[in-house]
Amino acid sequence: MDAEQFRAAAHAAIDEIIQYFDTLPSKRVLPDIEPGYLRPLLPSSAPNSPEPWSSIQPDIASKIQPGLTHWQHPNFMAFFPATVTYPSILGELYSAAFTAPAFNWLCSPACTELEIVVLDWLAQALALPECFLSTGPTRGGGVIQGSASESVTTVLVAARERNVRRRAEEEGLVEGTLEWEDRIMELRPRLVALGSDQAHSGTAKGARIAGTRFRSIPTRLEEQFELTGPALRKVLEECERDGLEPFYLTTSMGTTNTCAVDRWAEIKAVLQEKESWRGIWVHIDAAYAGAALVAEEFQHMTPEWAEGIDSFNLNMHKWLLVNFDASCLFVRNHLDLTSALDITPSYLRNPYSETGTVTDYRNWQIPLGRRFRALKIWFVMRAYGLSGMKAHIRQGLTLGEVFSGLVGRRKDLFEIVTRPAFGLTVLRVREDVCMRALKRKINGTTSSSSDEKKKKEEEEEEEEDGTAASSALTKQIYELINARGEIYLTSSVVAGRFVIRVVSANTNAQEKYVRRAFEILVNITEEVLGVERTEEEWKGKGKEEEELRN
Ligand code: PLP
Image (cartoon, rainbow, N blue to C red):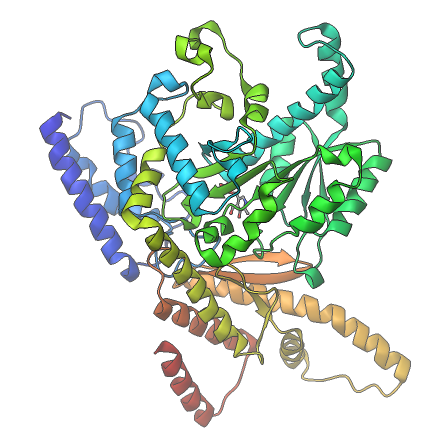
């Protein structure tokens, strides 16, 4: 492809991408294909002769698009959003053009320097404490990673090294000696990473990769699944009894299941109780919800992190208008990263790195090479401005309130399981409604025991049965909603309850789609419950739905 052919192909591709976005609402959010659909549509080996763009491009519409799940579709209300915007796409385009795996500053100074600047901009926009800025007092700063899991694994390795090195140094051992190496290897197997039972699975995976143990700390529905001080203390004491050394803790701002926010004041107070707990690395995983910090109404949270927090990550590629991948990791002291990850063979040496005056991001991450991701963040922050970013977040919050408000108006059918947060509503069908529906379906009878003891036993059984009944029917409803394919939702299980999660926060989200999603939820719920209505009631319902749509 020469320059002229590229110009024509790029124009055609851009036109098609714009058309894709423009026509998204008319598509099905989930693909209607079977596993393995693609192989029969493609040749069994790569073409021997070059093909022109005019024969490659049509395959996007005919072969690829039918197999896409449309994350930018206004009816995509599953997982968390993964936003993309035009300025962000432009950033990707330039990044591809300038391709430079800029692992050292000298490999392409603009890549490193822009990253330092835009991550300081972001830290300021989120009102993070000064310690997370490159200009702050603690050698802090930000680095762009590929994913939150990568961020967590990276800091876990840094925390592990900080712990064992400190202890070897305290014992007077000298790095580079066999005694040092032996002691480090003796200490590692007792290390245990912690996170609440709601922390994202990336922490357990990171611990496995880092070769340490992992223990989870129980949370409770009654406490909104927040990690509390007493729950942390209990697990720390258990670890101590078992001869283990907790060295790392993931806390969450917005857990994946329910968007719970952990209780940092309590957590920090507990970690001060014992000398051996004071050095535990505390990380904040704010992969999704951290984006909300651009809005002033959430910034009251951040002063708490000025002390006692070692690192924080936020995926701009979830809710903050930058396309995948852009996981922004901030650390209080970058020397914790570099002393764990800096391995410098002679071929990576250069006069600038030797002076120590430049940042070599290869020592802040696991891979060596890295993409120029700062460009797309720079473009998005400039093209939207902080005001545009805040408006986008507030729109997602408003849509969340609309949806949870609608659910709240149908208390006869649904229960909101946890406090709606950051645009996310977590719901299930009420237990009593499910029990009645199941009984109707099975034999049409209800309990009529007059014996008090028997009645109590029956009531206890019913409580257990109620949870099971709600889980079974909520699951059936959820599966039917996705099978019909007009909207896409995700589910989870919390405190033994099957729940449906609904969040609508991509750039195409709008109130009318949220209202329609609620209508679908109600209709399918009533269908599954076998709600029977008179003609008059159906007419009333039609009116109600009309009102909801408007
Ligand atoms: N942390 C939280 C709170 C998440 O919700 C998710 C994914 O949704 C992750 C981490 C993992 O994100 P990633 O795919 O960037 O590793």
